[in-house]
Length: 187
Image (cartoon, rainbow, N blue to C red; front, side, top):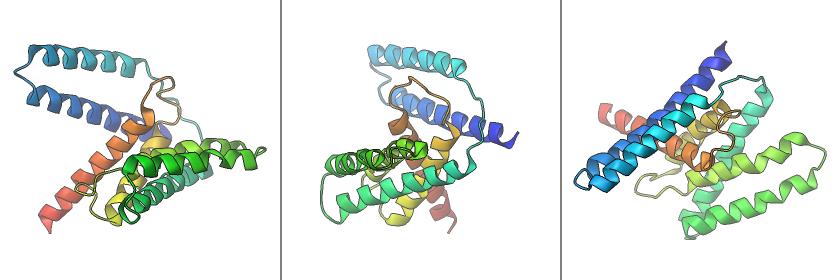
């Protein structure tokens, strides 16, 4: 029962981040009728796709913890390469993705390791966040953990839905930004 609620929460957060992003575009470009029509069409198509997405919950407890850890690892390594070693964020994420893509070939019998590059690469998208948004490692850590939970929560959803990892990273960074924004206003 709890797993189904986690999946529904993850799914709802991703839907809200999609709709919020599209609403921001619509608000910003409200003078251009073609952009408005396009955004409304995308919203309708997204809602149709979300309506058809299954939210079946499966039990993979250890796998879930490791998935969150792999997202964290990908985000931190990408951020370090980008900020400390002054690589472009795209190059840093590409290097992380390239290196981790070879790991399953060393552990051919382990089925879980086959999915590890996906989680690390999702974290690499989090690590690409601009320093103006993500000023420190604490922010990246928070965003990567949130993204890891979103990845776990949508594990069996969004199959055939392009851009899943980037969307999850966007959702995790957005939620982390709002959390840190609210905390900074209270303190």
